[in-house]
Length: 354
Image (cartoon, rainbow, N blue to C red; front, side, top):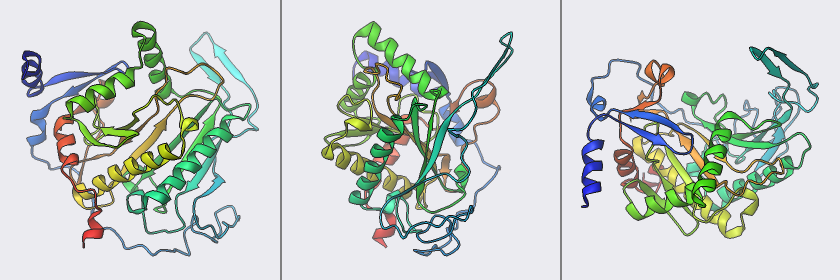
């Protein structure tokens, strides 16, 4: 162990701050708090048994949705415009600016829903790699097609899994919001990635991933094309980031091999999540990739974030409140311990072992 490693280990045992180079923000890490007694909210863990097909589900094949439209009898992925879209192409252009205090402008775009599978009773973790690859191929197609629209400069693909993350329907699905503006979180990353490239002549995430793969302590899984790590600066207890090993700006650069490798990484991480507490593990996940505004985004490096709320068990979640809302994010479980727990889990789903 080097002197630098020893200093790092000493620092990480006590309360300290960690810097997030992707956003330019800090988080507070207080390892001692993980031992505190818990008398707060305890979540239910009973998982209702779901049928393969639910006649009351508005996402199942052949069923009518709330607007009266009927889904086709789809057998793979299925994409449709969100019936309650937050964005619209028909929004009139308008802007208000009263001395910079009251500043508002219209926003255009489109929202879509992607059903991962016709089956109502599974999640990504329970799908085969080939089926997940079809989902990724659909993401790629939607990113490319939506990005061509005149009023779309950014395409955000995200999934909310589980009631804890506000998912209103358990049928496996995700959403795509394509809009004129580049949202806040991607904008932070774009600025930091561009700054790193200007100052060092290298890609921030290429350099960071190489470091994590060499050290291994926060690395969970890797294959030829992708690696999954608990970021050093993670805010959520079992936060994970999947990154492409080669410098790819977006899904548009994915060939068949990259799709297969990404599918393998996605399945591996979601299975480990479910195995952690032997429940369908809730999370919000999202893909960050280059905007579609026609600009030079060669500094951008494709990655996918997973933000899961569970902390100590299937019944105790992490609340981002108080200090987190008023000051900055804070975590109790260190990134290193979280990675160790996830890395030690089997890559075979717990349901398949019973």
